[in-house]
Image 1: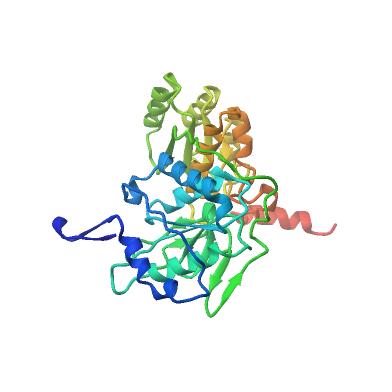
Image 2: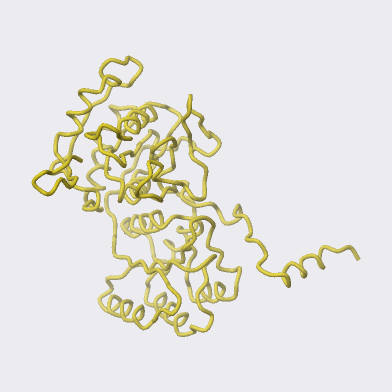
Length: 356
């Protein structure tokens, strides 16, 4: 990014800017401890908000082409859609045995005070380490699993977080790796899946919503079989208003029409637990599947990847949504149970535990 003084100084992508700045970075040109690198810039150069599955596929294909020639890869892109981009790449690159590190900055390289310089240097350092075998994001002072990360701040340098898993590594005076949570080396050769099916809809529920609007969207898309999946951002552990029986029936009708309905939580941390409350049980009975503790970015990119494979039924994809393919979800049996919601439930548990 650089200021465009023809457009009131607004920041805009500038082709060739990053190669210009990197050629002047003494950390890269004078320090023998830094890895050698080859820079490839894409043209035309797009803002990250304009990137989508075709662009992700281009990067995945380039990694496949150059896979045997490099120890790792760094992808520099804008922060706004980085978690979608990197999550998608984690699924597209099956049997990945090298680091693919995404990074960017809140303040561009062209500014005197910027975070781009350190982020880029540390991303290159991690890309040269043989202890990382997955797609990650390095930002500020931490290395995050890409499909566990989400952008949490638009103004601070600590822009990304990983709500339900610790960072893979943090930096201070040194590098502290949490090697117990890094993915083990994959078995088998790299397989690259370039096809993503983006025909899905995401809806965030709010109190008092009119489910007639949801019905119309589903019915309009179901008629021409365009809609493959519906992702619902629900309350808490996966709850909806218990009085809305019509919505439950609507979702049951959607699953009967072959639409995969996935429940996610609006909460920043924690997991969907559909069997915890009666409303969640009703969703299960309607054929809704749980998104577990996946981020929204991971849910939609995983869903697009699985449908894009074209070798799976909707039922199989629903089952795989709860299976960890790239470390994106905590298995249900390892999830911590939610705290008891009321004194009555606590009393029942205490009574059961009391010796007789």
